[in-house]
Length: 97
Image 1 (cartoon, one colour):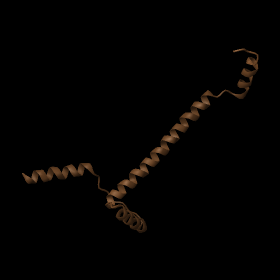
Image 2 (spheres, one colour; image 1 turned 90 degrees about the vertical axis):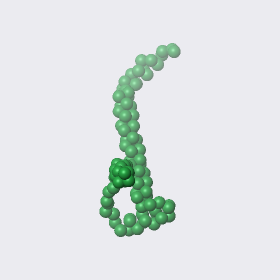
Image 3 (cartoon, one colour; image 1 turned 90 degrees about the horizontal axis):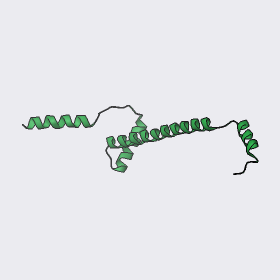
Image 4 (cartoon, helix red, strand yellow; image 1 turned 180 degrees about the horizontal axis):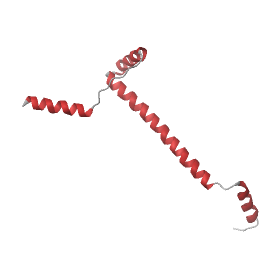
């Protein structure tokens, strides 16, 4: 009975977290170790936070790029050529509103 519980728990843990190995320069590893200790975090927790912040930062950049593209396209579609604006001003200069 205990063996079944152990197996279920082990499977549950595997499904929640992906274990990975990375290669990083020694000095970066040492800095990460020091930072993790200063923050009272396990090394894995520090790496998770760092990756989350990196992804969030780049997602914001992509959103800004998409919004800039949308607004620049909308502005280009709504712009009238200068000659057209001048023609409208000339044609309506004596109009009363």
